[in-house]
Image (cartoon, rainbow, N blue to C red; front, side, top):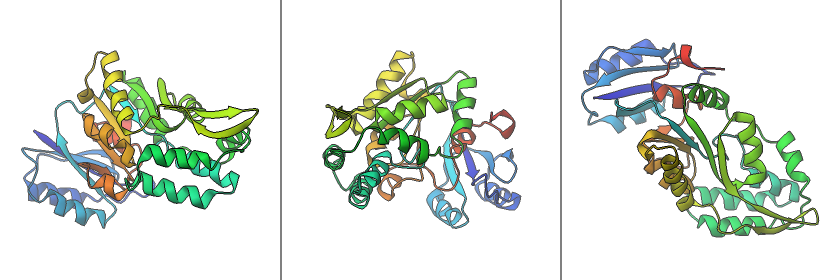
Length: 291
């Protein structure tokens, strides 16, 4: 059995009953179940429909996401998440670069790296090199003044952890940021890169080996095994090319507001919902979601 889920942004709830019922009837689905009025609904299917991506494309124009996935084992016991542009709304290195006066140069490299146009590790070294001489104290001010959580993140963490899930923040960014974000949201553990600091300033170098795409997949495998689970028990979320192996290796890999090349390689794409979409995809209802 499979389940089809339709989602939209909770801030602009526009999912109509006629949309859900029309699709359910066209695909011969089971009874509709509303997870959150005007935000999320689902229905059972015997098999994925042949015109799935044609329908997906038409719903995107209406600002509605559509996911079809196996019904069994939807509630996951491990959340493994990217940080930049996933759990937070910014790219931390771009914010540091802006403070260093090289924001435009670094942001351009970041965009190309996240879309898979550049080697992630080489691009990270290049960007960090442009931060040389920046006072390390800037990190605290960036965290305080520039970093904002992605909508739905606190609810995602609170709800999954209340149901016994383990949460890991695995980032190609930096420990100085992941530790603060993880503490704020309630992640159980973090993995990230280390910015080198000497005499209170950034040296322009990063600790080796760099945590890139292969390390993210390795983290999924190692953390799953340490918990007595398999990657199939995990839901992973990310937006960049360096997240792809992790997304493709998890039981449910969600490309969240992802770069075009990442979306093209993922079966589960959320372009309009926020992080609560990961809860609806697991079958949680609005009444089960914690603030």
